[in-house]
Length: 467
Ligand code: F0G
Image 1 (cartoon, rainbow, N blue to C red):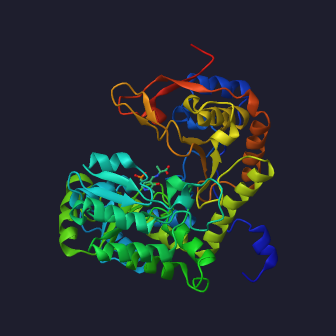
Image 2 (image 1 turned 45 degrees about the vertical axis):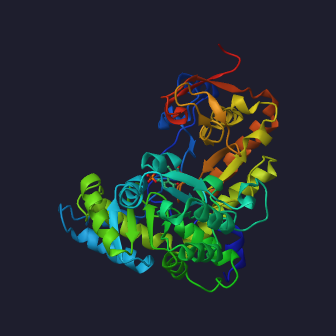
Image 3 (image 1 turned 60 degrees about the vertical axis):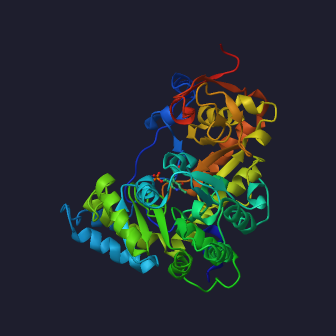
């Protein structure tokens, strides 16, 4: 704050003690490897990836304090001291009465959804990260992000906000008994890691109160969201990150958190909840599906690492570096002319595939052309989150019914893993691919993974020039 050179350069606030060597293969090897996995980057062997931007989930580098804490893990089956240590940390940072562990975010969701969703009920959210998990729980999902959040380029600082008028209209239309709770995802992953303002969470709370409904946060990236609030929302500049997280959580009744993001760990998650009866119910679901209520699918050592990681993630110096690094990649990409969504969000940079390859028809997956080219050109693994990942398909045939509103490729940045030199390399590779974009060709689906359209993860693609 007080040191202009430090603020301008934003050097990584850590020294590197352990490294994992990464090796660049030849272009021919890369071309052969991606062809052999049928252009599905999830199947690329990770030792053949130079820079891995598939996800920021579970890919963080842990600190020496976390590795040290791992040795103190108490592996008792029940009532292990590690859990009580984590619980104490959770109570300090999040304003909830009870906490239940889970093996990762989706385990926490299962616990909460089983206890709260009745078949046919609608769950509003700014954007659900995984609509499938809502539908698998018998629910219907409604994405109610503000219109500004759907624009690829915008000046809006809080593009993740919920449209509260639409929320009110939806609840009154379907009836409050058909809505188990209102969800808010902070930051909004599917909209580009975009933050939600405190003002908006307060407005969501007011609508929920009008109908006497609970508010549940998807808190996977809550520390990054809190940093944006501190930086961009009037009245928060002098507040601490923990203070802001406590205010966000106090406006809600519970949360699910994948600790693989802002927990700075490789595995873990939890539920936070205030209601005594719900807590009772959830305990039995945790016990049934995740494990006893004091480990919930995590080893004692994972729990210790998480307790330390949560204290580290709320450090403002860390968050300034984290958000600064992602923004730096965005700036380098813009300097190269690459079309990205703006403002740059919390955990990655999103490429607009259709602007990148206007000559490739939407049904020929421009995003797959981009992910293929990034790997072939520079050994970079990015993730298509667009026409392949989010299209609605006929469950029998796999035929596309409709494409999503935006067609994006995500470059997610793992926490504390890559340096600013890596960011420059990524942007240089993307710039080179962009300058030669007219050479990129479209793709078609060679094999659907299952009738349940999981082609992004398991299916196979082929260039449209091959039959
Ligand atoms: N909620 C959000 C907002 C997420 O981004 C994720 C995972 C989850 C819940 C589920 O957590 O993976 O621990 O079960 N997102 C990852 C990603 C997979 O790549 O964005 P999980």
